[in-house]
Image (tube, rainbow, N blue to C red):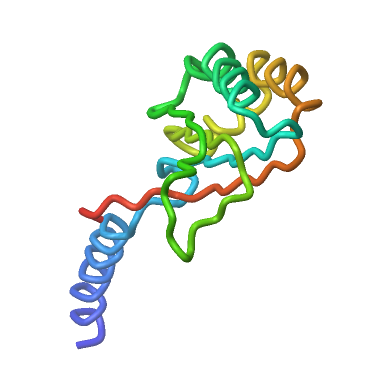
Length: 136
């Protein structure tokens, strides 16, 4: 009786383990990673904002591994009680995964962007999040 129980329970447990492992969501570091950066510039003029946006496009728009890139200026005409208004330029980049973001941060184009623009930053806030596929 004991050997019959073992003979049937071991394959059943293996099947449950394999099916359960396949049903688990992917590790966070394998998911797309959204990197949102909000810059407050020392000179908060339209001209400064546009120069900064142009620099983002020049250095950051085509770095390998990004699945989405956009940059824009604050929508000053949008008034909502919860709106935060202490920034000038927003950069939105989505990466294939965490490793791609890490490679982006040390990419020569990113490093040059930071080197050339750091003197213009009054404040930088970075918000990173893993994107959740609704089908998961």
